Length: 261
Ligand code: ADE
Image 1 (cartoon, rainbow, N blue to C red):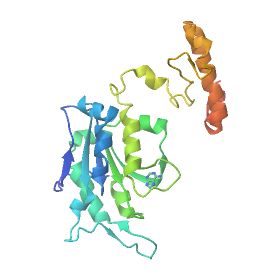
Image 2 (image 1 turned 180 degrees about the vertical axis):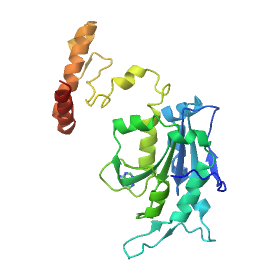
Image 3 (image 1 turned 90 degrees about the vertical axis):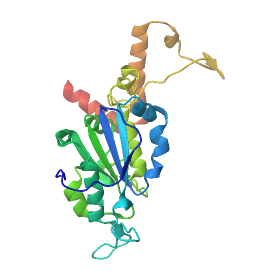
Image 4 (image 1 turned 120 degrees about the vertical axis):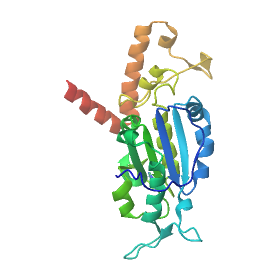
């Protein structure tokens, strides 16, 4: 991936930014309007207001070269559907790269959301949260011309083994999973390390008031005030639940524990 300092800038709209965000997301899409509500709501919106992250949106169609604003074409060799054109995608990508200072590019990654990519899990979200810039390219139609991937993309990421109509929802899933790992976004750091999947296990069950609801009682140990006992109970629940509900995770966890021993 080459830094295109010499290319002209395209149109991208900053939703909000502050002087030194920890992580800057750049979303490249044919449907940038779908992002706004989610990015401005809840924790993602707060992260932005606190200046911890920024989101920029780039409309691929703004880089079309004809009066019909064409962005796709039929595949050589014949097959179903249309492909996003490499020249237009590269121009859109370069317009984003142009705005990133060269010294920040070592921690920049360009990701194409695609069912062919590495499956997004908590470990990958942690890896991506180490970046300073993430350019997320949302594919559409039947796919993108392979040369765009070769020239500009560092990694393809999938959110699951099913095919969606485009990369917008996967990009939002990725932004959400990564943003909440940026230090300062989730108030209590412990709540991140204790949660589902951080250690390869599911989280323990949790309860709030009332102590009894429709004949179901909160387990006594949680009302005991004995933090040692509560910790042990939670640890057991995590092991039990993972074994019962997610045998795939349980197997990975058991293998890891064996190799550590
Ligand atoms: N685009 C279409 N389907 C997808 C998936 N499962 N993950 C990421 N991007 C996609």
